[in-house]
Length: 255
Image 1 (cartoon, rainbow, N blue to C red):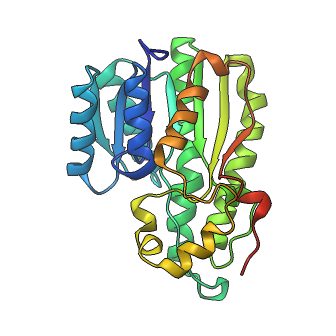
Image 2 (spheres, rainbow, N blue to C red):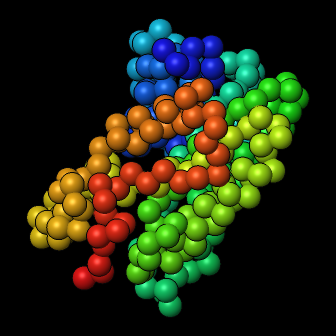
């Protein structure tokens, strides 16, 4: 197990990709801070699954758009498990609307969760590492839409483009502290957020025609990459994006 003795915080880990990441890191030996926003029962189920693997776990709710909540999340995580060594900024949301119909509330919802949250969670995590004089790993779950246009999701694309540049910038600033930071950019992954797509054969088939591997990604495709970047195998990798999309990005055309 490559992560024995480590503690990982995975934001938005009560379901979907975040849940898969939390469980995979536990399988690799890490103790896990499960973070959720509005569904404590789902977080408790993930916590129980992690504990069944023989690992320690705590479930902590937080609004990642609030710096006060973020600081409390880090404080409570350290109080519960003693330290944090790995941060996975996974929590993310999206809103589908033509640009001219996007409201301020929609914009704030997306940017607060997808960019402000990772910014200040990372800041609090780095301060924690500095207090311990310890190295660390940061993995951001971005999206192919950090580069690939996605009409009607402009705020989402802006947030992921910002996350990409934040990663590049911090790779330089944090390297002297022994902290690496990388992005993972998933393409179309089979998760609850895509339920409507999975039940629409026409839309699903059109998407699959754009994916050279001819299938949707699975959460385990992402969680395996996170486990690699969180391990010592990736000690010399920082400031980069690992694209996990079945070839979608270089084969995509908007219909």
